[in-house]
Length: 84
Image (tube, rainbow, N blue to C red; front, top):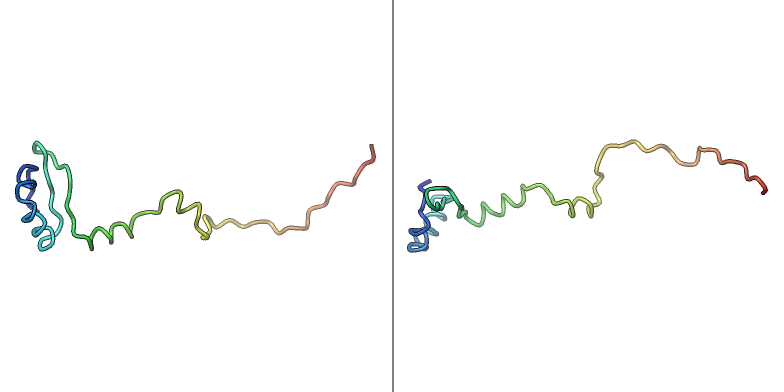
């Protein structure tokens, strides 16, 4: 993976895009520091699918959140009603 300075990435975006498709992810640097990565769409979709779900997705899901044994209902005694 050959890093692309941001100036080169802007000036040669078609080449950057072609390299991404043929060689895989391409790193873009700014002032020598890695700043961004251009990835092929198939890789992006795979990464998104593998990502952990958001809190909203977890709360709205029908899946159980933990293996908790719940006590059976209907066996507790109720207090006797008292007249006041």
